Image 1 (cartoon, each protein chain N blue to C red):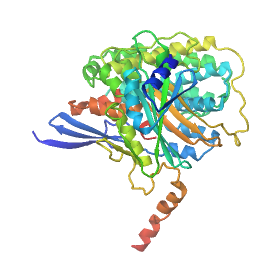
Image 2 (image 1 turned 180 degrees about the vertical axis):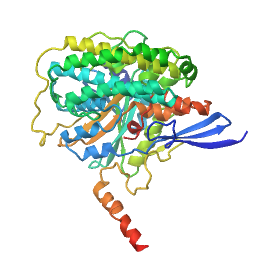
Image 3 (image 1 turned 60 degrees about the vertical axis):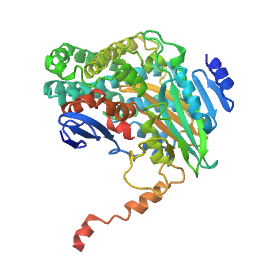
Image 4 (image 1 turned 120 degrees about the vertical axis):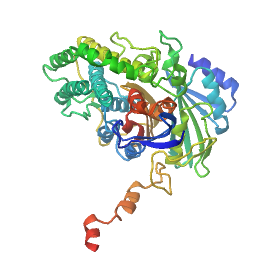
Length: 173
Length: 365
C-alpha cells in the first residue's frame, strides 16, 4: 500500500523523493515550494492527522529543516487497517539566515500553536499565520534559544549571575 | 451588554495546574478564549540535547508530572528504534503492566481533579486514596512514588519482587470493589450528570480537524487508540476492548475515562496470567560511552491523555541531536479548548478544561 502511495506521489510531483525505511514509515523529502501542495495531496488521500511540526537546526549545512508528521485517522469504526499504522515524515530545508516559510494553517487548523512555537524558538517567520505572538517565552532573545548557536551556559551567566543578592540590596537601603 | 476581559488562572480555584485562559465575556457568555501556556516552560528539549542518551532517562519523566511513565516508554522506544536494540519478551509484559498501572493512577488523579472542582469532595478523597494505593505499588517496585525511572533501554530496571503479583491483584481488587460506590456518588449522580451532560461538546469532525486524540476522539465514537492502531509492548498479546461513547460532551469523556480504568484493570489481570518467564533486561554497551548511529525516528504510544509521540534525530554522537515530543494536551489545550469554550458559560470553564484532560506541564515541556 505504501508503494502505491509512493508511485502516486512521484507521478504527480516532480521534485519529491520518497523513501520507505521500514514498514509503516514513509519519509518524503520535498523542495520548499512544493510543501503545501504535497500536504494537501496527502490530506486528501486520508492522512488528515497532523501529529507534529518540528524543526531541526542543521548548523553545518546552514539550513533549518521543517518536519511535518502525518498519520491517518480510522477509516472504519470497527476494524483496523494498515493505513492507520503508517506515519509519514515530510521534510523540507529552508535557509538559516533568511528563515521564512509559508504557514500551513489553511490546510491544518492545529498547525497554529506548532508554528507559533517554532517562530519563537527557531525564529522562522510563517507568512499567512495570523497570530505569531509569543507562546512560551517571557524575555526577548537575540538568537532564538533553540538554535544550535545559542549558548545556554553563557546566557545563564549573563542574565542570572548579575542579579544582586537580596541581603545586599537590603543593606544598601 | 458590556464586554469584559476576565483572567482565568493561573491562580484560580477552578484551574488545575500552571495555565491560564483569558476570556472575553459578555454577561455570562464567553465570546473568545485565549489559552496562555508558558508558566512551566523549562526547555527540556534543549536540555536533552546537552546530555547523553542515558542521562536523559531521569529527565523525560519530569516532563509530565501526572503521568511520567508513558514519557519514559516513548523515549525508550525511540532510543531502541534508533539503536536497533531488542527487548526481551518478559520485559514487554512488565512494561505493559507498569504502564496500565500508571494509567489507572493517572485517571484516578484526573478523577480527583474533576470531582474536587465540581465540589464532590468525598469522591475526590476516595480517588486520591486509591491513587495512593497504586503509588504504594510503584514504591515497592521502583523505589519512587511519583517519578519511577523504571523503563530503561533494553527492558526494565528490575524484575517484579517476590509476591508482587499478588499485591497488584489485591490492590486492584480493593479499588475495583469501590466502582459501585463511585457510580452512585459521582458517575450516575444527577447533580454531576446535570453539570456535565451537553457541556463542552466537541464533534468528531471538529476533533479530527483540530488534531484531537485520546478521550476527545473516543468520546465521539471513534476507537482510535495507539495501543490498537500500532501495538507496542505486549498490547497485542491479550484481548481487550477500546471503550467509546457517542455524544462528545464532557460527560462522555469522563465516562470513557471511567471505562478505560476498568478495562486497564482487566487487562493487567490478563497480562499477569500470560506473562512468560525470562530476563527483563538486555544489556546495552557501556552507557557512558554509548553512541547511537545517525538517523531519525518517530515513535508513538498511548498515554492516559491521547497520542504521545516522539520525533528524535541522532547524528551519531553520544547525545541526541534533536528531541521533540508530541504531547496530547498540546492540541487539546491550545486548539480544542479555545474552540470548545466559545459560547460557553463562565461557570463551565474549569469543567470543560478538566474534561478535556489538559495537563499544563505537558504543553510547556
